[in-house]
Image (cartoon, rainbow, N blue to C red; front, side):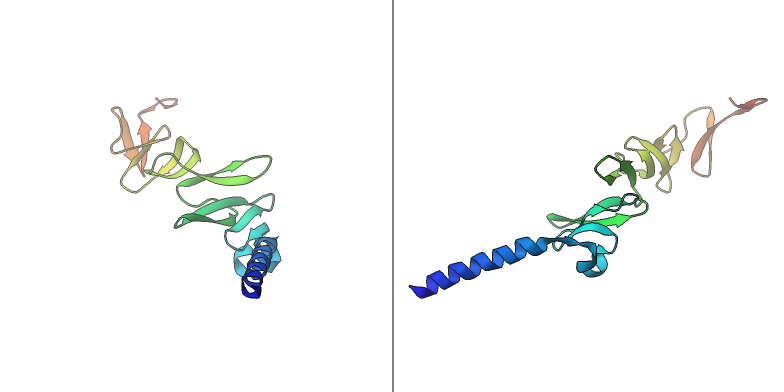
Length: 142
């Protein structure tokens, strides 16, 4: 009779210990939490300082958060009242984007035209360092 009770009490204490240590300030979880305001032992950063972006990296079935000054390639920073978050560009061809649907740099081999990545530049434009440019006129781009 005492063994099941001891096992139950131990399980409850273990669960309480995990819950209370799951969310901790940035200084308590080592290297992963240096830039965090709040850090989860299992999920890394869950809240960042005001000027940083929260980037959630997929790790199997879970996500691991890190706070960054700038979002990584294929992502853009979206600022909000509650948090600044790195969001994925919609197009996988987009290496860098200003917003979800507006690319500012394409993967190598693709051409950027009006915020989209194309395999070749449209008619009446030419490729210059990965950008599709229009023909020049006396007053600038035509």
